[in-house]
Length: 80
Image (tube, rainbow, N blue to C red; front, side, top):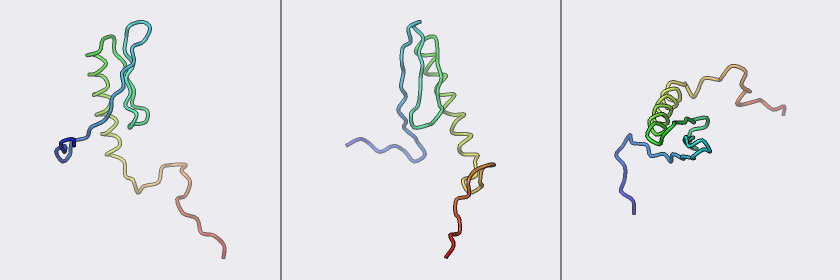
């Protein structure tokens, strides 16, 4: 059994891929569009952590009950 994390902590899987030029591409699959890269592993890790923080900041700033411009209506009345 894994130890429980403290409230407020979020554990996400970070995927690193070494490219043909030796640099690293990095992604967090649980956060759509959260990608980064770095020339070395440490740089890629720092960059993806910064990208993750920005992604979460934007996600937390959004009002989940406010419709996005151009979004389809969530509910439609059906004729009887």
